[in-house]
Amino acid sequence: MAEKDYLYATTAVNTGGRDGESHLADRSFEVRVSTPKDMGGPGQGTNPEQLFALGYSACYHSALEHYKSEEKITNKSQITTTVYLLKDSTDNGFKLAVKHEVALEGMELDKAQELADKAQKFCPYSKATQNNIDVEVKAVEYEEGK
Image: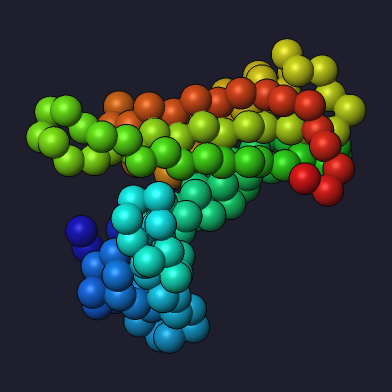
């Protein structure tokens, strides 16, 4: 890829894998990485699935905001993204699945689902994961302070 082909790039560095440390190259963000207790690890840090959920939810919400802006919708919105780590029987390893719960304050669920589906097609994370992992997008009732 030529340098002129992209709008932005960032670099992350990890040492120690799931039980180590990850940081951005400029050190503006650093995090201890740890295997979850549920998987037999110490659970004394953040895990890759949590980091993926944070990034995907922010990116997806930005895509939703794009369509809200286009349609002049000002309702508050909230995305709850759950990332699942599943066993993969094809190689005895692991794979991911994602569920986005999309809530727009005071909006009918049918209209919220329509916007959620548009955002799913527009989000760069969604494009990157398309046909690679199972992603469910579901409109839900808005709950203040969730």
